[in-house]
Amino acid sequence: MRILITNDDGINAPGLAVLEEIAAGLAGPSGEIWVVAPAFEQSGVGHCISYTHPMMIAKLGPRRYATEGSPADCVLAALHDVLQGARPDLVLSGVNRGNNAAENVLYSGTVGGAMEAALQGIPAIALSQYLGPEMGDMEDPFESARRHGGAVVRALLDRGIWAGEDYRLFYNVNFPPRSAADTLPMRVAAQGFRRDTRFSCDPHISPSGRRFLWIKGGAQHSPTLPGTDAAVNLAGHISVTPMRADLTAHDVLSDLAERLA
Picture 1 (cartoon, rainbow, N blue to C red):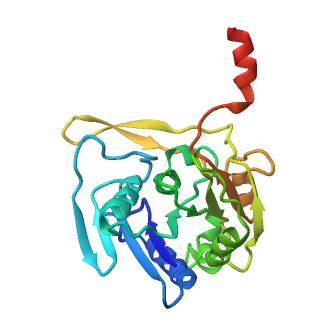
Picture 2 (cartoon, rainbow, N blue to C red):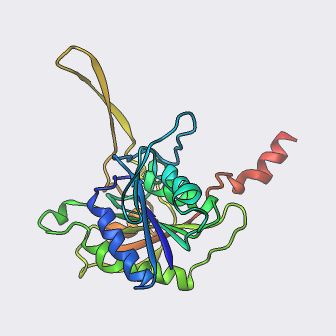
C-alpha cells in the first residue's frame, strides 16, 4: 500500500510522527509512506490553496517533503509533482494536536487536506487528538491516537463506505481526551455544534503602539447535542464522521424552490 500523509501542524509536529507510525503499520514492510507537509504551522487555514502565488517545496529526505503551503497545497504537490503520477492508495491527514469536531471542522487544515484528497478521487481520513485538562499528567498526549489509530483506519478501509464519484466520502476521526486504556470504542457521529461558544478576536497593543488582533477559539469542552462528535469524544469514545465537500443544504432545496417559484 502506498500512503500519503500530511498535516496542518507542520513537518516537525509530534502528531505527524504518530501518523507515520500508524501509516507504517498499515502499509507493511513492502509499502510506501510519503510525507508532504507544511514547512510551518498551518492550523486554521481550512481548505485554503495557494492560488495566487507559488510555493516553495523542499526534499528533506527519502519520500519526505516540506512545502510553504497549506495541507491542501501539500496534497496537490504530492499528487501532481512529488509522486510523478504514482497515485497513493490512501491519504491520511494529522494527527492534529487538538480536536477537529463540531464547528472546528470548518476551520481545520487537517480536514482540508483530507477533503482535497477526496476531491482528487483518493480515499482520505483526517485524524485528530482531543486534548483536555484530564490529560495534564499524561506523558504522551497522543496516546489514544497512537494506540488505536491503526485499528480505526483499518476498520474504515475494510468496512467503511467509500461511495461517490463526484463529491466522494471522506472521514473525520477524533480520539477522546483520555488515556489509551480508558478510550471507549468507535461511535459513528454527526458533526455537532457548540451552541454556547464562538470563535472571536482579541485586540492587543504591541510595544511599538501598533494594534494587533489575535484570533481566539471558543471553549472546547462546551457540549454538543448527544450523539454528535464532540459529545461522543467527551464521553470517552472515538468519533467517526463521514463527510463530503458538498455544502448544499439538501434538506431545504424543495421547500426553497416552492417558496421562490
